[in-house]
Amino acid sequence: MDATTLWLIVGVILLLVVGLVGFVALGRRRALRTGEPPPSVERAPRGWEKPAEDSGDGPSATQVDVRATPPDVALPEVELVPEAPELERPEAPESRLMRLRRRLAGSNSALSRGLLLLISRDRIDEDTWEEFEATLITSDLGVAPTTELVESLRNKLRVEGISEPGQAKAILRAELIKLVDPTMDRSLNADRAEQPAVVMVVGVNGTGKTTTVGKLARVFVAEDKDVLLGAADTFRAAAADQLETWGSRVGVPTVRGAEGADPASVAFEAVRAGIEQEVDVVLIDTAGRLHTKVGLMDELGKVKRVIERQAPVGEVLLVLDATTGQNGLTQARIFAEVVDVTGIVLTKLDGSAKGGIVVQVQRELGVPVKLVGLGEGADDLAPFDAEVFVDALLEQAA
Image (cartoon, rainbow, N blue to C red; front, side, top):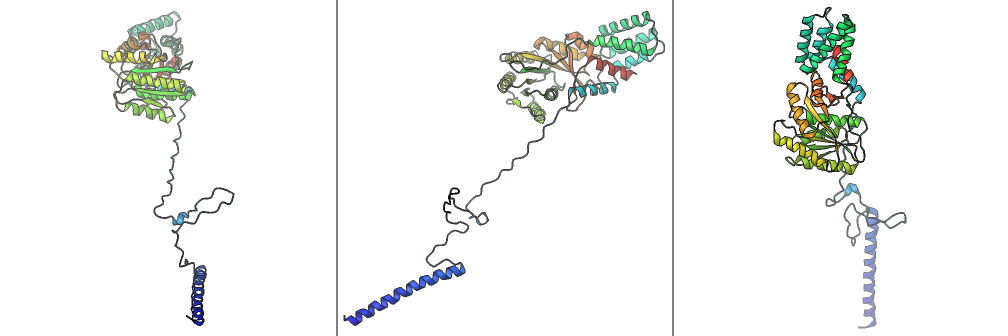
């Protein structure tokens, strides 16, 4: 090969190299003008950019365009937390007492009708006294209290020579208050000492016991006490749910067990939780039971004994239906023998209740009526007051 041929070959190679470089440069300029990628660049997935360089203001990170996120990339879900329901504020005990008087005054009980019979007569003769005595006995006042009241009234009216209805009413008021006994301590032993105060609520089926526990929790919350509920009624499927619903309305927690669990174990756990959480009051709801069922009554005694391994039971409240009359007294006596009842809660005292049960149950058990149920409302549970009770009856009789 001569020198001329060699230089010709070198020239051709140079021309090819220059042409290739020009082609690549042209492609890059076209990409800058049109946005198309150059021929030798693989296109990145849409919506992603390369990691940003660290500017010193914060950690570098891969930037994601959410509007163009690849289908295989899941965005974090945002959980919407519902607002907590607003807690109810229970009615104060003072206004409950006022409502107690209005409710009782609006009832048409046998006791108030008997009082009306006496003070509305222009002349009180022997027939009036006999009729008055019979009406009081039918009001569930009982034979002994009725005889005591009638004899005291007859002596005072005769000795003092009173025949004017207004004066007779004043004497009648004083004698009735004495009969109801305002000296009884009707306060609830629900003040925390070193441990929470424990209150057991007992009663037969159908007296409104679980509802009473829920309403009693509201009474304590109105007094700014921290309360915990124990659902030891494990036989009735809906009892724990019902109690939990009452508590949730005022921010009170409920300790519950499985359906059919040992009631004593649930009560034990409730008291233990109350001690750990340093609450003021632990309220224990127990299963309703017939007073004639010896096994169930013995179980009730067991619940109380198990609780007292951790803390004393300061109150045992017996819930009685005020409309049951003499049958309620039989129930009360047997419950008192088993669990040492410290107070009575009379439900349904308004309406069809005869009223005299208040005096008789206190006489029979030697324990006071501490609370009375006035109706179906959430705050229709009021502390019992002897003077308010008597004044309401006399208002009805006026």
